[in-house]
Image (cartoon, rainbow, N blue to C red):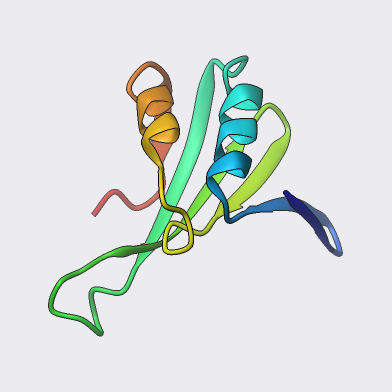
Length: 89
């Protein structure tokens, strides 16, 4: 995972299946997980999620679903956690 710093914010960029697995391991301790997604619905007929933003336990992750072959560990974690979504449309 790559740590990047923006003044006032810290996040981890997740772009491989192995990094997803590490993030999921860290998220197991969270009671609630905040999630926001970005999609390309304005530009393509078949919409796809292009970015998943996750915050929990004082940490932030930017997940690149277009670069990751297997998001199953994350989806399984989501099915067992209390999620808070931004937008939800």
